[in-house]
Length: 120
Image 1 (spheres, helix red, strand yellow):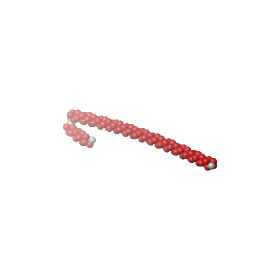
Image 2 (tube, one colour):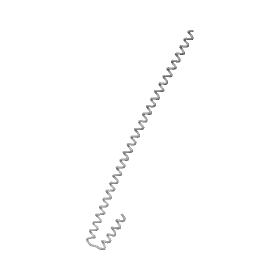
Image 3 (cartoon, rainbow, N blue to C red):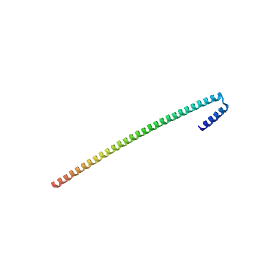
C-alpha cells in the first residue's frame, strides 16, 4: 500500500509538471484502477471470510459427530455393564439355590441317619 501511495504521488507530481489533458485522463485511469483494486481486495476478503465460515461449520459438524459417537460409546458401555451385573446377580442366585439344596440334602441325610439309629 505504501508503494502505491509513493508511485501515485510521483505520478501526480509528474503530471503537475507536464500539465495538460493527458494528465487528467491519467488521473482518472489511476482512480479507476485503485477502485478496481479495492473491489478485488473486498471480494478476496469476502471469499476468505466465507471460507472461514464454511471451515468453522465443518469443524462444528465434526465436533457434534464426535460427541454423538462418544455418547453412543458410553451408552453401549453402560448397557454392557448392566448386562454383566445382571449375569453376576443370576450366578449368585444360582449359587445360593445350589447351597440351599445341598443343605436340605444334608438335613435329610442327617434325619435318615437319626431314624436309622433310633430304629436300631
